[in-house]
Image (cartoon, rainbow, N blue to C red; front, side, top):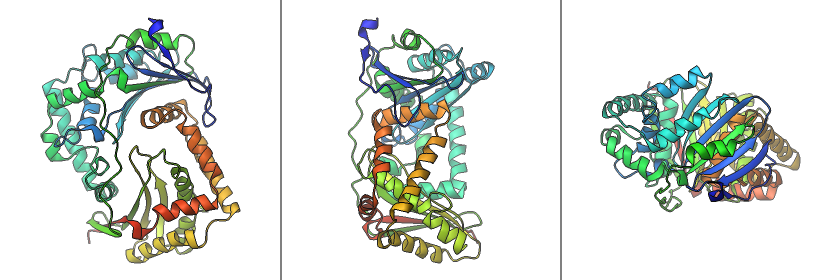
Length: 429
């Protein structure tokens, strides 16, 4: 059996993460990455499928997320609720999440019992039940989740901005789907999605922590016999519909004014992405950032403000979000945000400011990866969306970004006249 295993080239470690790396591909196509890091006697196993909202059949939006729920609702060996009960009985934690580009399932266990997760993953990969009663029950749960998101001001605003920023593209569709698409999606639709994408040759398993000896053999014994045969994913394409200058949308939710300003940004592996990440830190990373200093500390027109950059396979989005102090005119805040964005180009950061922001970015990365759980998810996402070296390369490029590179990226992507969406959630009154 071991003769069928392909040892893949991989660095012995990542500069951006602690631990020793090993990478292999089983005979059925499952990619297995071990990240040995005995900092604590715990192990995270994270199974990523290269399947998300982007892979759904038209008219059945939310299928990927619906199936994520159903993966906990019964398989040949584990009945409804048994996965959660077994995880709790073993003192562990499990969860899952769906995005536009991938879906992930993870378990955190003590180091002497982490292999229990393998049996669960193997069973629901090969023998998912999809009982009609469970499907109907879980559909109702997700419909309530959709209603909850729609009633929450920030969630509703975020979804509306995404839809306007990426019209006609999967990134503009809600991960949860809509009431109409959920009602149109049944057990056979879920089974078809599972058959097409939930195969070993479309999956990456990351095992991180105090894994001990024989980890590859344990994975191969449990998961190596499941046949491959995943469907090839459709090609990736950047959003084709151009934005026309500043596009605005307005919703009436809650009791305070909330701003979400969004620009299209390049995909996560694009050379400009790290420079934009550093620009987000200059604008909204910490108390010394430009937006925080001007809008919160000095002018006191916002309760808080932040800037962030997503990481997508086709494209990303750069966002500035803020909650306005009651009584302050939203138009005043919007105008100041645009002024501060323009000021980034007219008064670029000097080397001292850039170095401070580089250190903030590194500190955020370190604090965000203290636990093996976080390390496992970062490795899995990198491999599911890009490649294993993505983490190191992105951090190296960020640290090498100088003022010229930052200004060039800002000029390409952060000019309102090149297209952006200004979303406002205003008080109902």
